[in-house]
Length: 167
Image (cartoon, rainbow, N blue to C red; front, top):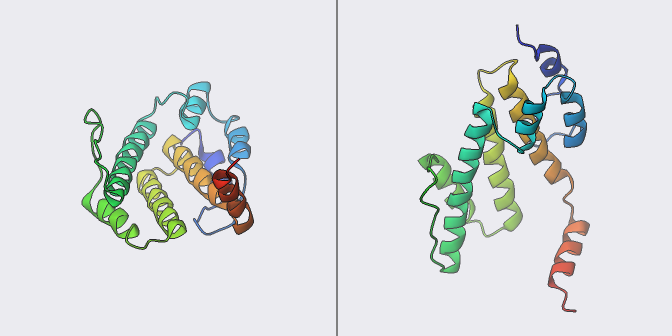
C-alpha cells in the first residue's frame, strides 16, 4: 500500500474543461502534509530528483523545441535547436503541433498545445495509481487548468494594450 493512498484518494478528478477545484498553492499546502522536502522541491521544479519529473522535463523541452521550430519557420527565421538535448517527441505529437499552427487562431493554438500537455500528463500517470507520479502529474495538470482560469477577454485586452502602448 502506498504512503500516498489517502492523499491521492482525496483529490478531485481533473478534466481540462472542468472547474479548477483548487489553486496550485492550495494543492502544495495539502501535499506538504504527505510529501517530504525533496519531493516538494521536485514537484515545484526547484530540483528534479524523481524519474517522473525528469521524464516530464525532457518531454516538455522536446515539445517546446518543436513549437519553436514551427514558429521560426512561419516567420522565415532559421531555427537552431539545442543539439545537446535529446528529442523524444513522437511523430503524431509533432504533426498535431504543426496542424495547430495551420489554424491561424492564437487562442486555439495555445489551447491545443495545453491539451497536448494535459494528455501527455495523463499518459505519464497511467498505471501509477497511488504513487508520487500521480501527484506530480496532478499538480502539473492543475497548473495548466489554472492558467486558463485566469484568461478572459477583458484581461487579455488589457495585456495587449499595455504591451503595445507607446509611451
